[in-house]
Image (cartoon, rainbow, N blue to C red; front, top):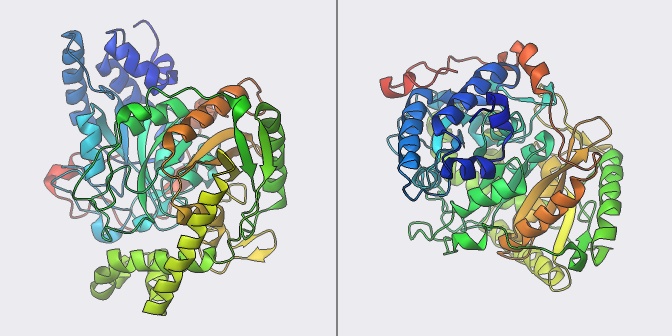
Amino acid sequence: MSETPSDILRLTAVEMRDLIGARKLSPVELMDASIARIEAINPAVNAIAATDFERARTQAKRAEALAMQGAPLPPLHGLPLGVKDLQDTADLLTTFGNVGLRGYVPRTDNSYVAKLRAAGAIVTAKTNVPDMGAGANTRNPVWGATGNPFNPLLNAGGSSGGSAAALATDMLPICTGSDTGGSLRIPSALCGIVGLRPSPGLITNRSRVLGWSAISVLGPMGRNVADTALLLSASVGLDRHDPLSYDAAAGNFWPLPPCDLSKLRVAFTEDFGFCAVSAEVRRVFQARVAALSPLVARCEPLTLDMRDADRAFDVIRAESFVAAYADTWRKAPDTLGPNVRANIEMAAAFSLADRAEAQVMQTRIARQFADAFEKYDLIVAPVTPVTPFPWTELYAKEVDDQTMRNYYQWLALCYGVTLSTHPALSLPCGRDEHGMPFGLQMIGPFRGEASLLSAAHAVEQAFALDTQLARPLPDVAALARSPEPSLKSIVTHPPLEGAAEAGAARAAV
């Protein structure tokens, strides 16, 4: 190709893959451009943790040779991939943002990463996370804080904040994420990219300690809906080692089935009846609903009784943290961050009766959503209740003059949907009143990822015609000129101390 590296990186992942398949784009050229962008931009946002550049270049050469042979190619062939640092990558440092794991180099990939490698993606780098993924502010004592690409002094969201920031700045075309109470949707909204929380079991997760728990899922992240759908299509498939796993055909999600916006029945809610939401976010959301309403068949307010959502999420979330981290809590509590400790301490106060009550509450919420989808095709809501705040603040302590009772209550717009087990997507829709990205949360029917993605794609295309509604882009050139060294100021432990030799060579950023 004759394009410059910047031209290459502006291509969508779908366009990149099509050009690789047509032998018009070299995977080596693409990888070199991606690595150059990481080296130029990452100092400003600190989205990238460990890197695997040498091995990635070698794999890109192999990908190019296969493409030149005209052989059938897998769906993600030659695409650089960012992997969230909560997900094991073979022979590549995986720290979870935790001081106790700053030298951990897994021997094998986790199930999601293995599937994406098999689909042709090339693991290029790990993306930054909060300590053990706890919280929606990506900062930890190993790698430091990830800044928002639109203002590096502000929060990029979490826990998939590194993936979101890397995508927003075109460092990588596709990235992995995960979501419990909004960990994938929130950074997507704050950084202006697309993130999908799929139905539990659609993407296998052998790493989940509580195999039957539907609270945490792995999910795809991309710069637009089509890229996200392509990544999802390469992520699905039955895995009998995951009790929630179910079979789904890749062709259900890619190519995207068509959607006639004019026939969509849409419901909207500003707060699900229980969430604290700032006046500013309400105004911006109302404007998005007003823009959507003329395009669809119906757009009506939705009323749900979710008064039990906070309590149900408290119990179910605490249970999952005890299952994952209780042993560390007993043996090395000082290695756990304050958010993780808060969940485990909360769990100590809960009884078996509390757990049963929480399940009853969750079931009631899930059935309300099922009832709503008998009348509507899509539910829309805000993703976050506030504009991005400084990353130096651990979490939003106050929303709409309400004091948050813990570090995650400000995520209620997302965790209420988590409890429903319905798929949800964050779609970038212009900017808020502070000039920061605004994300529209789009919720689909039970196991309805295909219809959700199709509807989101149709809205994305319609909104792209209006500069006030289209996906915003950060000023990458300004980021390259003005790195923000304070983003690593909270590092208290060198990330490579004690690292195994195999991972040390690939860990420096």
